[in-house]
Length: 329
Ligand code: PMP
Image (cartoon, rainbow, N blue to C red; front, side, top):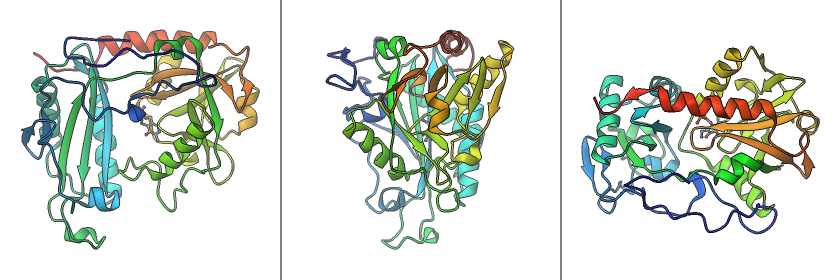
């Protein structure tokens, strides 16, 4: 596991597979009510607060109704990775739910970079939220006059390195990805209960992640990651219309594949296609690119991370360490 001066993460106590005893969680599920940064500074609406002082109102509709949006962003080696794309998606999410972000994109970039600087980090993870703001107990967003911007910089607990070497075991869950006509998965909203329910099912099945299908029975995505399969050197991933988030890491895989002269096809596919795939992997800002070697008890390919996946992971690591918006001039 990576560490740096500001890191207070503990080494994972075990690297046992989920099917045996324990699950090593990624950032989303690690039970740590802290950023992992000593004397952390959390940005709320233009001011910085310590972890204990950083609080929001119980009347914020982000809390009362999950009314708000967010981004999870990584920075590597003193550079924020794919910042423009994350801000683009944040602004798209805001537009879709009629939320006015109370600052310019330039202002947001500066606030985000200043938050990383204040926390003296070179590598880590940013959680950026825009909540609807304080209103009354009714759900009408017109009550909320001032949306809030919150930026939390954290050290990040990855999946244990073993997971990248050995791969994950995932299960298909009964909870379907929400229908775009009710809550569009393309909006990265603060309402993640659909994903949380799926995650609970994966936990109960002692699996590493949950594979979520859409109402048509096609693969949508995992609870916090996009899904890819490889068959006969062709790469497939579900289209956004299947209920997948337009993942930033997903788009980096498109770039890497084209560098490698491999074709990525956005196509609907089913569990069957994963069962018979040669390789499978997940992508997400927190998890990065992680191989999947088992789905619903069936081994994928020979049950080991495949050669194309391994090459893509290696290239991804090079790209993340060399590119991005500089934090320290
Ligand atoms: N799907 C869901 C539901 C997510 O929350 C995320 C973000 N963790 C992803 C996919 C991956 O998107 P990205 O690569 O932009 O992090």
